[in-house]
Image (cartoon, rainbow, N blue to C red; front, side, top):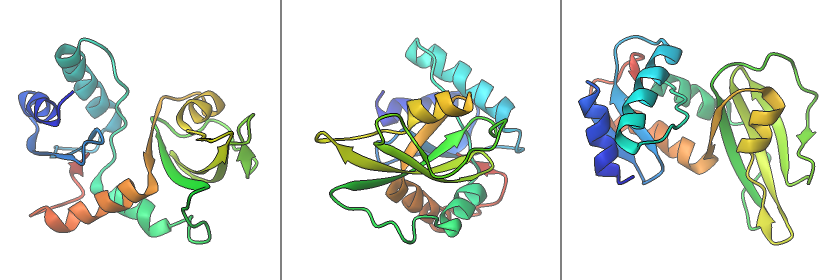
Length: 172
């Protein structure tokens, strides 16, 4: 979906000050309240009408994104040609704790930290490809999720500085 179409879909659902971020499927917008589940359902219905297919939506406020970045669990893990850093946002907190580090069956994904519904992982190069954590994490924790590269999440935090009148009521 083109980012302009995505913006229009959010605006048609009544959201204000809608902006997409770097062709990544991230949308920053104004919303009233912080009911993540209700907000997700509203957006999912809008996108189903616009796209004709279902998509998982996992909203986070800009304050929550800021908190994730401030935590910086990757301080000792530098990105490089053999390593990628990710944050997976679960639609609900895990029902059971996990022993960390937790590795995917191919050992191409390593979960290094979990905080609430935020899962921090490192993807390792295996057979010329990086593991992508989303499907592994969804299976492991039994919840729909969306995964973002750490650099993208850190850049999203910077949108708070560029958004006039930002407040904890903002979601995205």
